[in-house]
Image (cartoon, rainbow, N blue to C red; front, side):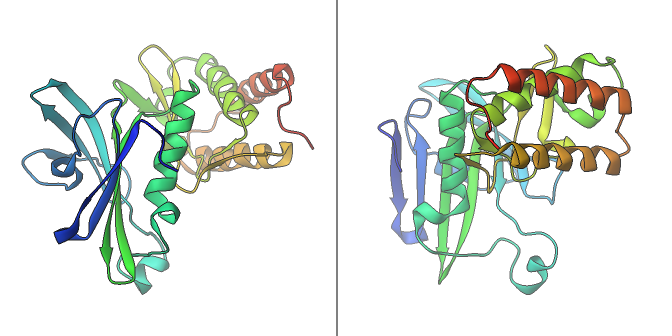
Length: 247
């Protein structure tokens, strides 16, 4: 669904469409949706499908942003082109779904990147997709932060995750790379591809935590005392949240 502050635009020659955040951008950001060498810097993490870009506009200050092109991993990427997805309508594209979820979460005050635009390019019965978001300044992943400040970041992560779970938010890939901590020790969540907001059971929320724990162990960033502090903070915050996660 497009809100009153989202504008949909198209570029027929390129079979391209986008939705952009009219609260922030004055015009469709077509120029910034392709990783062109003169304005995009690759981000090392991930599968080579994300870039730092700086949006320059004579009507407003420059905006530091992150551009991500959707790309398959694992076995599916060996069967079809990595950037190719079956097209079943704009509202079912992953970029539009993630854009709309981020819009809702950001509007409600949850710590997520502000979405700027979602774009999709038709390729026969398939589609290529991209998402443009405001960059989170001075952040590092959970895995690189926890060993430096004792239990404090673990507790803050637990409280932040409880805010999302209490709001019915399911993160499909909750790993240590997608939990960021900034210089003020504020915790942010990124990468809500395939995420959702709606009824969330306590068992589902705990499976989210289990996924994060497995990620930390895999990255050798797990600390038993810190993890216990995270769980305690999460449980206390969930108990204090009205109507959070039944069952």
